Length: 133
Image 1: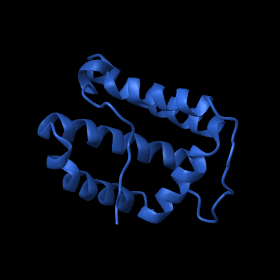
Image 2: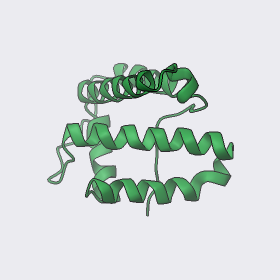
Image 3: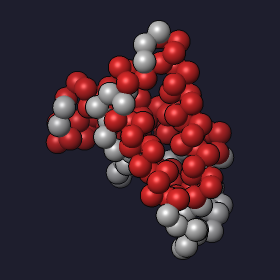
């Protein structure tokens, strides 16, 4: 449930700006569909790890390693992900669409499990922010 609130918080934050400081599109921008899948997987991993470890200091390394595995799966680099995140974050309409799609995909997955999204995705109080270096 907290992931949903976190995603809504991000949407609200981006709705307060009108692309002030919009960044130019990087040459190796991750296409929107792939970016949605990456964010979805990172959100699921973060939810699982938070439930297992509870405190950020305990799961930071696990998140970094999981992030690297997800980036490898989608054939993107951490730098490419960061540049794409910066780009999409500076273009509010696109970021809203991305998080709306992520939320829809997560809701679909939780529906397939036969449980509410709150039960599957509880205890995620902030958006995905990885520092992979």
